[in-house]
Amino acid sequence: MQRWRGLEEVPGDWGRSVVTIGSFDGVHRGHQLIIGRAVERARELGVRTVVVTFDPHPSEVVRPGSHPPLLAPQPRRAELMAELGVDAVLVLPFTQEFSRESPETFVQQVLVDGLHARLVIEGPNFRFGHRAAGNVELLAELGRKADFEVEVVDLQVSGAAGDGTPFSSTLVRRLVSEGDMAGAAEVLGRPHRVEGVVVRGAQRGRELGFPTANVETLPHSAIPADGVYAGWLTVLGGEQMPAAISVGTNPTFDGTLRTVEAYAIDRIGLDLYGLHVAVEFLAYLRGMEKFDSIEALLERMADDVKRARELTDAD
Image: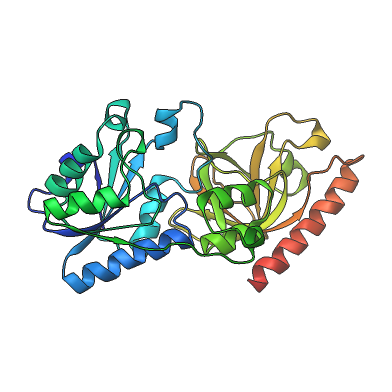
């Protein structure tokens, strides 16, 4: 799959394409419907599929300080889109100047001149252009003038997660913030994960016999609620290891810094410092507690590891 940052990286001989546009944070099951439809239609038409997305998140540019917690960084989103069969991802730098472009300018520069769109597929609530002035009706009108079609896909899907709330990135963020990893996984179609570099911490886990990878997560990551989780620790491109994961401030030691730490179960002598890793959350085990003694903490940690081992073995 090709990845472009900015229209200037689109090959000059790029042919006609089926395009879909959006932030697609998390590439959840609703997103998968629309991207999957774009891939399907592109194959029928004998052209390629392009997903257009933005960096940074538009809300941070339009309303500074409002950046939502992110469910997946751009490289991860691209990986998920590639798995769906997308041929190319175009990441447009979202700037103040770009935010002021009219819907007509956006269509001409991106869809017509840049990607030679034959078909654009969007959800019914798609908005674009300055002050979100453009909608799917305007997009279809502009398409008739510029020789591309518009197909509107109902991407609404729901399930047990969020008591039947339609699946969305907003719903996933809420479920993650509540520690409902089963619900988040239902919407995403896979476990929620965070990424970052392993850094040196207080090394208390090593002293207690449970050496953990202290993960410095990427900015704006959607971090689950404080507590202990079962899941996996993966060095990107490497082995997926069952893990017991702690999110919080280590209250037993009067900590103040909120951290994500993962203990790779039954792995001895791991040296992960400086490596980029992913932590996937399978299940919530318990809340964060302050213990009266180290012995009580160790007893609970041993139980956490036992439960995490059982859950990851069963998954």
